[in-house]
Length: 234
Ligand code: OAD
Image (cartoon, rainbow, N blue to C red):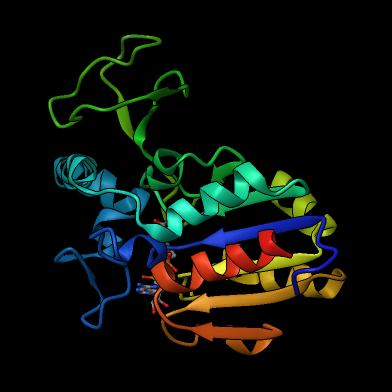
């Protein structure tokens, strides 16, 4: 696994931030922080009750101030800094823990809590304040901001860049994701259909676990530093 690697794509999901105290999505009760997903993570839910949705993401954004990157985020940041080959970290997470750990070669395919999308001018702006009181857009001043989050039914960001990276990858690693949400859940098949080795690091087997060459089960805070050490040590 470790020798001769020149191109790695890493996909991360909510499980990598669980040990930082951020809840995963698919809790046993099917609710996300006491809300139905269709109420807080769809354009229809936002149209129905914008105050509920804005308050929900205001609370998630505020909670980031109390969360710190954990050893898994730090290990990926170390990989970013020390791996001399190509690397792309694709996160489904909307928290900022990868970048706070120091990762640069990364993108947020499902958007970011600390970004605002203006429904009037369609520009995205860095954002770190509440939205419930309808603040003006920093670009056009319209009071039309929504969370810059990719909701169900919307197109994830930077898909062309992701598929281009998958085409070149010789290793695809999936960390802390249930494999329940497409298109991210399909990346493993994309990668293996080409030529990449595939590795899953997760607490339990994901829905697409059988597509991976290897699954290592355990906590991301243990498994990711071990894997990064092996890659860089090799
Ligand atoms: P999920 O909540 O569906 O899955 C989290 C996965 O992480 C599960 O397989 C857990 O077993 C695993 N896990 C939990 N704790 C872990 C730990 N300490 N170490 C390693 N693994 C652990 O979250 P995602 O797969 O990220 O989309 O969900 C995908 C998307 O669905 C999210 O990006 C979000 C959501 O709806 C949008 O908001 C668009």
